[in-house]
Amino acid sequence: MKTAGRIVGLVQAHHRGWAGAKDFSLARIGGKYAVEEVIGRLQAMPQIGAVVVAVPDDPGNQIFREIAAAHGASCVFGSRENVLERCKGALDAVGAGIAVHVMGQHCFVDTALLADMLGFLEQENANFVSLPDAFTPYFAGKVYTRAVLDDVERAIGALPQEARAIHFARYAAFIESHRERFKARVYERLPHYDRDYLLKVRDMAREIFSDDRMHVDAAQASTVSNPLFESYEFALRQFGKGDRVLDIACGDGYGCRIMADHVGQVLGMDINQPLIAANQQNNAAANISYDVGDCFALSLADGAVSGATAMELIEHLPVEQVDSFVREVRRVVKQGGSFVCSTPQNSHGDIPVVPWHVKEYSVSELRAILERHFTSVKILSSKSGGRLTECETGQKMVALCR
Image (cartoon, rainbow, N blue to C red; front, top):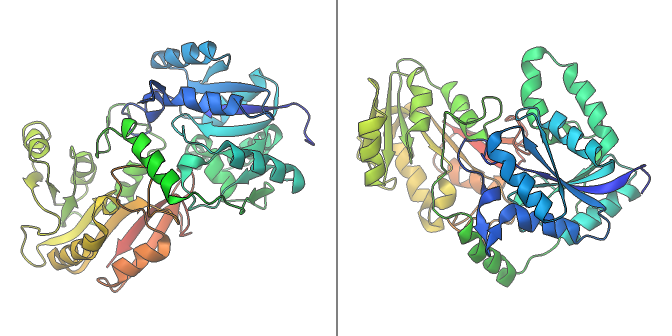
């Protein structure tokens, strides 16, 4: 390769996910941790001279030191929120010139694809190579030169103080939003995964995704970069103090609590009766109420609420019932009200890796569904966990419907 220094596999990991709950990198699959599979796959690539795991300086992450040592890899500790600084430190500790960067939970990463991306980096004389925004992240990684991180650090450091933290936390998203500036390229020669292989991966993933709910520990969640919370923060900007807002599939009520200080009343609804009972007992507030409800037959009158939210729900619904769900939301939201929903974006989502997802939608598929029931639909997206932008392509979509 053109850059001095060796090619290093960089594994980004933490014992907690961005939402504060246990991270999937420590989920067990086939008798070992997911992060062990990632380390092993990277070590099997002949191009890679070393593997380093970059984790936040947190006592709960000592387990990664033990895992790395058991597999002949290094483990470097650094900042939790400034991921750019952490990853730079890890790469420098092992003398890296080029990084093959994979998340610790992505144990199905396609190393043949990573090898092709390495070749493309050299061929294009590029500094950074990633895959199309809507390509499933579970098979993916990023490939880039160590030197580009210095350029990125300087660029983020020149931003206003209040804008820096999110970009230091999600620096790949910053690069992907400024591709020309950083000589970042998209590798388009994507592999074809046949149906049998995708079904096999989906079945194996049941060990990782052991239930169908996203777990949140708000007290431990990132205060800088939390894509789930950002969806609710976006929704807040559509509602006001006098509004009554319905949060569909509310889970443990974390979204209800985020919205409660900013709207008149929040109704959290979920089909899980024990969860709603726990919310009623533990998560009550003066302007929050909880109720058991079926999203296909909401127990509300026409136009009963000013707005509604449904975060990370549509992908769980039977495909043939998604239209019925959106029609029901349209019925209970008053004229002029807003509906905000979020869902993963996947251009090949008919067989998602996450076993609890029935289907993951492309931008065009989601837009077609929503526009059948709402006159105005605006779709935003985030790349690699970064801030929502007006660009529609990314790993996650948030739709505003009126």
